Image (cartoon, rainbow, N blue to C red; front, side, top):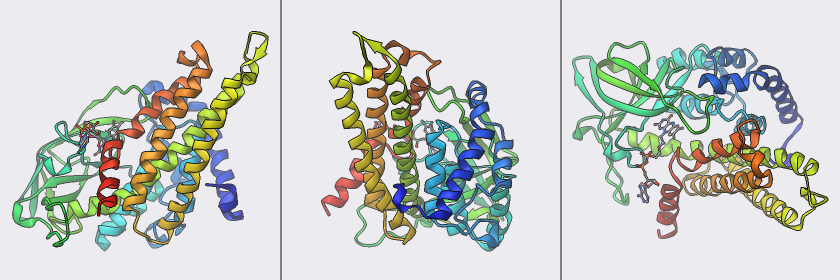
Amino acid sequence: MHERLLNDELRLFRDTFRDWLKREVTPHYEKWEHDGGCPREIYRKAGEQGFLLLNQPSTFGGLDLDFRFSAVLIEEIALAGANGLAFWLHSDIIAPYVEHFGNDAQKKFWLPKMASGESIAAIAMSEPGTGSDLQAMQMTAVREGDDWVLNGTKTFISNGINSDVVIVAAKTPAETAAKAPATAKLKYTPLTLFIVEKSRKGLSVGRKLEKMGLKAQDTAELFFSDCRVPNANVLGEVGQGFLYLTKSLGRERLCMAIHSIAAARYALALTLDYIDSRHAFGKKISEFQNTRFKLADIASEIEVTQAFLDQCVLDLNENRDLTMNAAVAKLKATEVLSRVTDECLQLFGGWGYMAEYPISRAYADARVWRIFGGTSEIMREIIARKVLE
Ligand SMILES: Cc1cc2nc3c(=O)[nH]c(=O)nc-3n(C[C@H](O)[C@H](O)[C@H](O)COP(=O)(O)OP(=O)(O)OC[C@H]3O[C@@H](n4cnc5c(N)ncnc54)[C@H](O)[C@@H]3O)c2cc1C
């Protein structure tokens, strides 16, 4: 967020969290990348310091803070180059599902555990055969007495290994579908969300997926084979899952956009250091006109996008509808990040391609932001739909 939007409280929070990252994350991050995931205890440590579930009510273990604090936290993680630390997913995507759609018993049980870091959360929508087209989901949930029986496979699940609890989307019988308003362009699919403990019989975790980037984030497959879940674990109402997902995706996309622009700033900072010390043809790399113009383009893209994101952060704080603007924010910010990391890596020459240089990691980490949480193409579809309304 632009410095001028911060007050003393936000600055203090930022500095405290930044120091914590320097102590607890940066020294270990390379090892976590090597291990293919962060240790579970980092969530406990963050919980102890009050860095999880910032926006949730204190009655459920949260901190009653507004979304600007989340934005600052997300930015600091990206500015530290710790892209695999998915606190935003746990606190800003999954906790709001429980907070907004869960009943009191579910909130009382899960939110305090998530705030303390005792329980780590994941969300499972994507399947091997479908990610963008959620209506084509194959996973089913069938009612049997007081239980639902879940069958199917989820894949690409972030926190798939470390999590204790997963919000799972599954198809329920056709008659459970939420009724779409007459003006809706899409028919609603009968999806239902379930809170599923990882310890449930019939749920097994598949392999940890090898990724080109975000290596410190564990991503896995989940298999459900006659996994029985009590009716009390239905999140919200049966058949309303598609509505809940579409309502929540705006916030998710904004978080990703915020991360992306801060990650672009991180790549720029790495580059500024390098080009000032590297020489060619008797000059610093920073002195070539090409370098200066590239930096000007990069800075312009970052600043213009930042201004839009800041407005979105304030809009979210005021509960304004973000459907269109969050899609714009994600599309723009993630594409800026891709361009910026590519241009920055180029300024490193061959060293940029070497894994020992953090810019190569920044480049590899950047690629996924245009894909997950809705691809750039899906963002364009959402925006086009609004434009054509
Ligand atoms: C590292 C990582 C972590 C992830 N974490 C999670 C997670 O925690 N939980 C979860 O549920 N999912 C997660 N995902 C899945 C992610 O959200 C999906 O990969 C993404 O939504 C795209 O779906 P897909 O991979 O099935 O691609 P597809 O839907 O098969 O798309 C393939 C291509 O077709 C394009 N396309 C599809 N539909 C259209 C259209 N209508 N118009 C134009 N082009 C179109 C896409 O843009 C894309 O280029 C993760 C993915 C990754 C890579």
